[in-house]
Amino acid sequence: MKKRIAIFASGSGSNAQKIMEHFKKHPEAEVCIVLTNNPEAYVLQRADNFEIPTHVFDKQEFYNTNGLVDLLKNLQVDIIVLAGFLWLIPQNLLKAFPNKIINIHPALLPKYGGKGMYGDFVHQAVLTNRDAESGITIHFVNENFDEGEIIHQARFKIEKGDDLEMLKFKGQQLEHHHFPRIIEHLLKKMKSSI
Ligand code: GRF
Image (cartoon, rainbow, N blue to C red; front, side, top):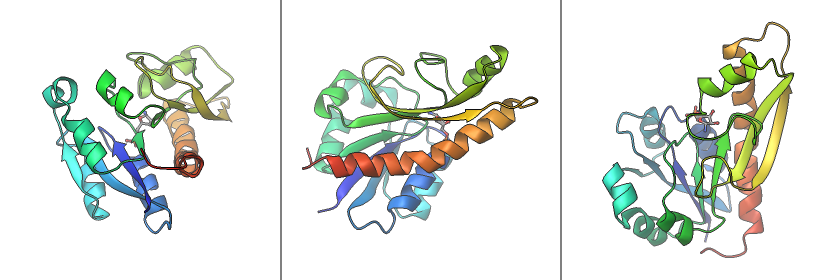
Protein backbone atom coordinates (compact mmCIF):
# COMPACT_ATOMS: atom_id res chain seq x y z
CA MET A 1 0.00 0.00 0.00
CA LYS A 2 1.19 3.51 -0.79
CA LYS A 3 2.22 5.81 2.07
CA ARG A 4 -0.48 8.35 2.71
CA ILE A 5 -0.04 12.08 3.15
CA ALA A 6 -2.55 14.50 4.71
CA ILE A 7 -2.05 18.21 4.09
CA PHE A 8 -3.36 20.99 6.34
CA ALA A 9 -3.44 24.45 4.77
CA SER A 10 -5.37 27.64 5.45
CA GLY A 11 -4.62 29.79 2.43
CA SER A 12 -3.43 29.79 -1.14
CA GLY A 13 -1.71 26.44 -0.91
CA SER A 14 1.16 26.92 -3.33
CA ASN A 15 3.21 24.47 -1.25
CA ALA A 16 0.29 22.04 -1.19
CA GLN A 17 0.19 22.36 -4.99
CA LYS A 18 3.86 21.39 -5.32
CA ILE A 19 3.37 18.43 -2.97
CA MET A 20 0.29 17.22 -4.87
CA GLU A 21 2.21 17.54 -8.16
CA HIS A 22 5.21 15.69 -6.78
CA PHE A 23 3.17 12.73 -5.54
CA LYS A 24 0.56 12.64 -8.32
CA LYS A 25 2.15 9.72 -10.12
CA HIS A 26 4.47 8.59 -7.35
CA PRO A 27 4.73 4.80 -7.04
CA GLU A 28 5.09 4.76 -3.24
CA ALA A 29 3.15 7.66 -1.77
CA GLU A 30 0.03 9.75 -2.36
CA VAL A 31 -1.80 12.75 -0.95
CA CYS A 32 -5.05 11.29 0.37
CA ILE A 33 -6.73 14.37 1.84
CA VAL A 34 -6.43 18.15 2.15
CA LEU A 35 -7.84 19.72 5.31
CA THR A 36 -8.53 23.35 6.05
CA ASN A 37 -10.13 25.59 8.65
CA ASN A 38 -10.96 28.12 5.93
CA PRO A 39 -13.88 27.35 3.60
CA GLU A 40 -12.64 30.12 1.26
CA ALA A 41 -9.08 28.82 1.00
CA TYR A 42 -7.80 28.52 -2.56
CA VAL A 43 -6.11 25.28 -1.56
CA LEU A 44 -9.57 23.64 -1.80
CA GLN A 45 -9.73 24.49 -5.50
CA ARG A 46 -6.22 23.18 -5.99
CA ALA A 47 -7.14 19.88 -4.29
CA ASP A 48 -10.24 19.58 -6.48
CA ASN A 49 -8.06 19.98 -9.56
CA PHE A 50 -6.10 16.91 -8.43
CA GLU A 51 -9.32 15.11 -7.45
CA ILE A 52 -8.07 14.85 -3.90
CA PRO A 53 -10.77 14.77 -1.19
CA THR A 54 -11.02 17.73 1.17
CA HIS A 55 -12.34 18.35 4.65
CA VAL A 56 -13.26 21.73 6.14
CA PHE A 57 -13.37 21.94 9.93
CA ASP A 58 -13.97 24.61 12.54
CA LYS A 59 -12.38 25.41 15.90
CA GLN A 60 -14.95 23.32 17.77
CA GLU A 61 -14.17 20.18 15.76
CA PHE A 62 -10.44 20.82 15.88
CA TYR A 63 -10.01 21.51 19.57
CA ASN A 64 -13.00 19.86 21.27
CA THR A 65 -13.55 16.56 19.49
CA ASN A 66 -11.58 13.54 18.35
CA GLY A 67 -13.10 13.85 14.88
CA LEU A 68 -9.92 14.67 12.99
CA VAL A 69 -7.89 11.97 14.75
CA ASP A 70 -10.55 9.43 13.81
CA LEU A 71 -10.70 10.68 10.23
CA LEU A 72 -6.92 10.58 9.77
CA LYS A 73 -6.60 7.18 11.45
CA ASN A 74 -9.37 5.75 9.28
CA LEU A 75 -7.51 7.01 6.24
CA GLN A 76 -4.34 5.34 7.57
CA VAL A 77 -2.38 8.54 7.20
CA ASP A 78 1.39 8.14 7.56
CA ILE A 79 2.42 11.78 7.66
CA ILE A 80 0.63 15.07 8.33
CA VAL A 81 2.04 18.07 6.51
CA LEU A 82 1.25 21.61 7.62
CA ALA A 83 1.65 23.87 4.61
CA GLY A 84 0.56 27.33 5.64
CA PHE A 85 -1.59 26.27 8.58
CA LEU A 86 -1.64 28.65 11.53
CA TRP A 87 -3.51 26.98 14.39
CA LEU A 88 -1.64 25.30 17.21
CA ILE A 89 -1.96 21.51 16.94
CA PRO A 90 -3.94 20.00 19.85
CA GLN A 91 -2.58 17.27 22.13
CA ASN A 92 -4.86 14.52 20.81
CA LEU A 93 -3.43 14.91 17.30
CA LEU A 94 0.16 15.15 18.55
CA LYS A 95 -0.31 11.99 20.62
CA ALA A 96 -2.00 10.08 17.82
CA PHE A 97 0.75 10.98 15.31
CA PRO A 98 4.02 11.22 17.24
CA ASN A 99 6.86 12.49 15.04
CA LYS A 100 4.53 12.32 12.05
CA ILE A 101 3.48 15.97 11.86
CA ILE A 102 5.75 18.43 10.08
CA ASN A 103 5.59 22.13 9.29
CA ILE A 104 7.35 24.56 7.01
CA HIS A 105 8.35 28.00 8.24
CA PRO A 106 9.63 30.88 6.08
CA ALA A 107 12.71 31.71 8.18
CA LEU A 108 15.78 30.16 9.70
CA LEU A 109 14.39 28.94 13.02
CA PRO A 110 14.92 29.48 15.89
CA LYS A 111 15.04 33.02 14.53
CA TYR A 112 11.71 34.61 13.68
CA GLY A 113 9.44 31.89 15.06
CA GLY A 114 6.56 31.84 17.52
CA LYS A 115 3.03 33.16 17.72
CA GLY A 116 2.37 36.01 15.30
CA MET A 117 5.52 35.28 13.30
CA TYR A 118 4.11 34.26 9.94
CA GLY A 119 4.01 35.51 6.38
CA ASP A 120 5.00 39.11 5.85
CA PHE A 121 5.71 39.63 9.56
CA VAL A 122 8.63 37.25 9.29
CA HIS A 123 10.16 38.87 6.20
CA GLN A 124 9.62 42.36 7.58
CA ALA A 125 11.48 41.44 10.78
CA VAL A 126 14.36 40.03 8.74
CA LEU A 127 14.57 43.28 6.73
CA THR A 128 14.32 45.46 9.83
CA ASN A 129 17.23 43.58 11.39
CA ARG A 130 19.28 43.93 8.19
CA ASP A 131 20.14 40.23 8.20
CA ALA A 132 22.57 39.05 5.53
CA GLU A 133 20.62 35.87 4.87
CA SER A 134 17.30 34.20 5.42
CA GLY A 135 15.77 30.88 4.45
CA ILE A 136 13.28 28.18 5.29
CA THR A 137 12.91 25.56 7.99
CA ILE A 138 11.09 22.24 7.86
CA HIS A 139 10.55 20.87 11.36
CA PHE A 140 8.56 18.44 13.47
CA VAL A 141 5.56 19.93 15.19
CA ASN A 142 5.13 19.97 18.95
CA GLU A 143 2.84 21.78 21.39
CA ASN A 144 4.54 25.15 20.82
CA PHE A 145 4.66 27.28 17.69
CA ASP A 146 7.76 26.65 15.53
CA GLU A 147 9.72 24.80 18.22
CA GLY A 148 9.86 21.14 17.19
CA GLU A 149 13.04 19.42 16.08
CA ILE A 150 14.50 20.82 12.88
CA ILE A 151 14.55 18.41 9.94
CA HIS A 152 15.97 20.60 7.18
CA GLN A 153 16.95 24.19 6.47
CA ALA A 154 17.84 25.96 3.25
CA ARG A 155 19.12 29.52 2.99
CA PHE A 156 19.43 32.40 0.57
CA LYS A 157 21.50 35.58 0.51
CA ILE A 158 19.81 38.91 0.96
CA GLU A 159 21.16 41.28 -1.68
CA LYS A 160 21.26 45.03 -1.41
CA GLY A 161 17.89 46.38 -2.47
CA ASP A 162 15.93 43.19 -1.77
CA ASP A 163 12.47 44.14 -0.54
CA LEU A 164 9.74 42.17 1.15
CA GLU A 165 8.41 40.81 -2.13
CA MET A 166 11.87 39.59 -3.10
CA LEU A 167 12.39 37.85 0.24
CA LYS A 168 9.01 36.20 -0.15
CA PHE A 169 9.87 35.09 -3.66
CA LYS A 170 13.27 33.69 -2.71
CA GLY A 171 11.81 31.86 0.28
CA GLN A 172 8.96 30.43 -1.74
CA GLN A 173 11.33 29.12 -4.40
CA LEU A 174 13.22 27.23 -1.70
CA GLU A 175 10.03 25.94 -0.08
CA HIS A 176 8.67 24.61 -3.35
CA HIS A 177 11.93 22.89 -4.15
CA HIS A 178 12.66 21.31 -0.77
CA PHE A 179 9.32 20.49 0.86
CA PRO A 180 8.15 17.65 -1.44
CA ARG A 181 11.61 16.08 -1.39
CA ILE A 182 11.87 16.16 2.39
CA ILE A 183 8.41 14.59 2.72
CA GLU A 184 9.47 11.84 0.34
CA HIS A 185 12.67 11.30 2.31
CA LEU A 186 10.82 11.07 5.63
CA LEU A 187 8.30 8.61 4.23
CA LYS A 188 11.11 6.41 2.93
CA LYS A 189 12.57 6.30 6.44
CA MET A 190 9.24 5.22 7.98
CA LYS A 191 8.99 1.47 7.86
CA SER A 192 5.30 0.88 8.45
CA SER A 193 2.22 2.99 8.66
CA ILE A 194 0.90 3.96 12.08
C1 GRF B 1 4.63 29.47 3.47
O1 GRF B 1 5.46 30.56 3.36
C2 GRF B 1 5.02 28.63 4.67
O2 GRF B 1 6.35 28.78 5.02
C3 GRF B 1 4.15 29.19 5.76
O3 GRF B 1 2.95 29.55 5.13
C4 GRF B 1 3.19 29.86 3.76
C5 GRF B 1 2.20 29.11 2.94
O4 GRF B 1 2.17 29.53 1.62
N1 GRF B 1 4.00 28.24 6.83
P1 GRF B 1 1.31 28.75 0.54
O5 GRF B 1 -0.16 28.79 1.00
O6 GRF B 1 1.81 27.36 0.46
O7 GRF B 1 1.49 29.51 -0.74
